[in-house]
Amino acid sequence: MEINLTAVELGGRLFARPTALMLLGLTLLAFTGGAMDIQNPLLRPTVEAVIVPARWFLAGLSGCGALWFAWRLLLLYRWENGADGGCHRCGGFVRHLEGRWGDYSKCMMCGGTKSGHH
Ligand SMILES: [Zn+2]
Image (cartoon, rainbow, N blue to C red; front, side, top):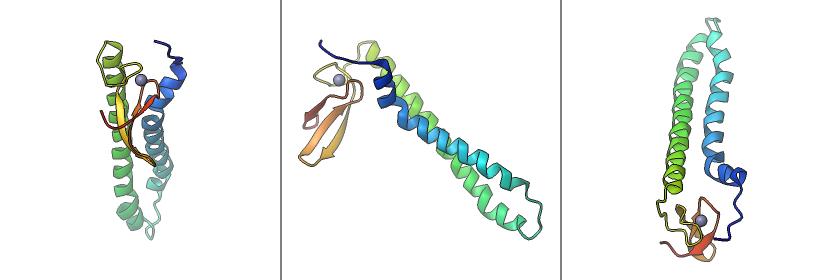
């Protein structure tokens, strides 16, 4: 196999978005945390009506990011242990996408693309 695969590239492709989602959720949770301390009786109902559900949503978002991350980790583990995901170059797991020229598959491991869904 003539694959020029760096660990950084692979890690970025697999984990960049799940990590970003988790960090986004956690950052906004920390950010909205300050609003929970508002004791002003005029603002208090707003905080409870808006910020509390928003924080639950953000917690869910971080949770999804964590699950996504775990899923990608599992895929990586399976691939390293010989599972065939269908990539014609490295056997990695492919995602089915639609591009300008129709359907294609993109490998999550090596980044290789191939037309059609497999
Ligand atoms: Zn591949």
